[in-house]
Structures are given as C-alpha cells and as structure tokens.
Image (cartoon, rainbow, N blue to C red; front, side):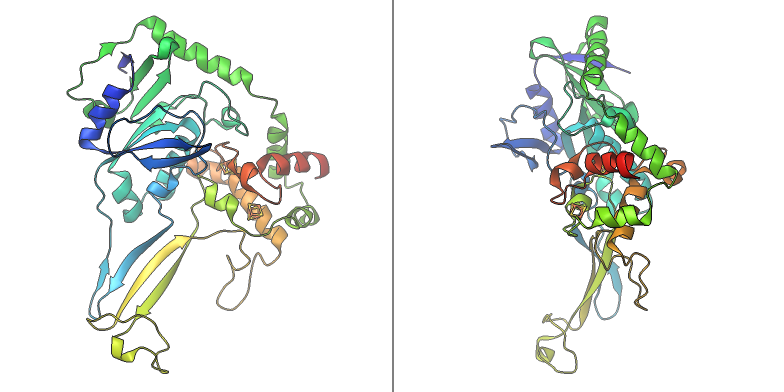
Length: 353
Ligand code: SF4
Ligand code: SF4
C-alpha cells in the first residue's frame, strides 16, 4: 500500500479534474451538499457530513429504464463521463459498498459505478449524531471501500493512501513524496483518539440485541408509529435504503390527445411510445407493500416502522451483506419530524420493549 505526503490538496484536485468530473461537498452557509466543481479554485474539504449521502450518484432518485417506440423496447443505460467523488466520509463509503452488493446485477447502477473514482476522507472528530465506530463503518476509511484515502495531518498537510488499482492509475503523472513512518503512525493515533471521543452509545447495542430477540411487541411498534407521518425523510436520506418503484407512462400521438378512449397524456410525433421509469420508494408509505388484490402485509403503520428497523439491524441480513444495514450516520435522527430516528428508537426499545 503506497502512502504519500501532500502539502496541500490543490495539485491532486487539479490533476484529477483533468480526467474526471470533480464533485466535492460544498458548505453553503451551513448547508453542506455534493456539487460539481467545474474549475479552480476547488476549495477546502468540508469535514461535516453532507445532508444527502452520495447514493444518488449511482442509484438516481428517478430515471428512465427503457422506452417502447411502437416496435421495440430499448434500454436506456446511462453513459456518464468518468467522475470523482472527492472527500467521501467513511460511513458513506461503507454505504456505497453495501449498495454495490445490492445492485451488483443492476446495469443502470453499475454503468455509473464503473465510472466513479472514490476518494475517501478519514474523520478525526466525531460528528453530531454519528456512531460509525459501533457498526464497523468508521471513523477511518476502510481499505475495501475507496480507491484513495486522505487523512489530515498537522500543519495542513495530508496523508494520501492508495488502496486500489484504479486509485493508483488515477495518480499517474503526479510527482509525489513518499510518507514517513511518523506520518503513517499519526493517522492511527488520530483515528484512535477520535474513536475515544464518541459519546456512550451502548443503548444502541442493547437495542439491537433486544430487536434481534424480537422483544419489541406489535403494540410497542404501533405506539412508536403514531409519530410517523410517512414523509419518507428517513428513507430518502438513509444512504443504504434502496427500495424503488416503477411506473410506465404511455404517450400517444398529438391527434389522440384528449381522446376519451385513451385517457392518456403526451403527444409524441413519431407514434405511440411508452417509457418506464423507476423512482425511490419508501417502506414507510402505506401503499409500499400493497398488492394488486389490495392485500397489504404492512397495513398498520407499526408494521412498517418495525420493518424499517429490522432491515437496518436484523442479523438475518448479515450473511448477504457482511454487516448491518445501518452505517451509523445519524441522518434519520436529524431529519425525522416525528423524533423516531435511530437514537430515539433504540432508547425506547431499551426502556420500553
Ligand atoms: S438507519 Fe439512520 S443512522 Fe443508520 S444508516 Fe440509515 S440514516 Fe444513517
Ligand atoms: S422521517 Fe420519521 S416521520 Fe418521516 S417517514 Fe421516516 S420515520 Fe416516518
């Protein structure tokens, strides 16, 4: 594993921007979000976790899967330019790793994923609601989840660690100074110090244990669910949530618009067409599992809330993904207007279940 010492990130950013579309987290008056940085200055790396994770880069909020031109169905696989996500925190990288498994056979996801270079950044301070250290997702970037890793050192210098072939190739043409053993040691010291600064989250472990012993009753979940307004904030922001729905939209020639027979919309000049889109769905919606027969396995709000938390922490999913479905980012706690994010729910399980 090659490791280098950088005096600043600007040269690396400029080098990568020659071959990749560069995306970075930008802080806009406290609102942090991923943005395309078109040209220098590239700006400093923001250490705050962005409100939205990087999942939308690969599993987009809405996209066309295929169109029907009246004769043939045609897939619409995306063909993005190579792009780099510069400065992804460890927990969000673990979420991408999780999604890579879920979407392994999905050509739309993979078309984007294959074009991406992931530059991770170690966290040296705990974030507000985070507990990555408890669920094997941080604060240090895991070697298997990134192509390159950045670690902030003293005097505004950086340690650059190469952890994949793709990362190595991306550095071709840059003159780099090898890191010393002191620089490498500083990384482990900083990460260990950071882990010790997290608060006491033992109630999360206790909650996971109770949940896996199926101790929370249906009545408990029903009580919790009274506070869910099905806004989908949690599933939208959760970086490991991957549920989606599909819908086919039929378009008819202009002459047929407003026809009482068709009742359809559109007006394509080249004859009848349809396009099928997929979009993010939410397991907290009442109709999420409703079948065509109107049978609904999760008709009660309590069943839906329970389902969400089992998907995050049940041992049943560990064999498939090698880990829990939660990477400890705390976004659900920050966003839920009903105060039933991960910390609140786990505390209630410990106390009441
Ligand atoms: S369940 Fe909450 S804390 Fe866990 S990954 Fe999803 S948003 Fe983050
Ligand atoms: S964010 Fe809270 S209120 Fe909104 S859907 Fe999720 S659990 Fe329900």
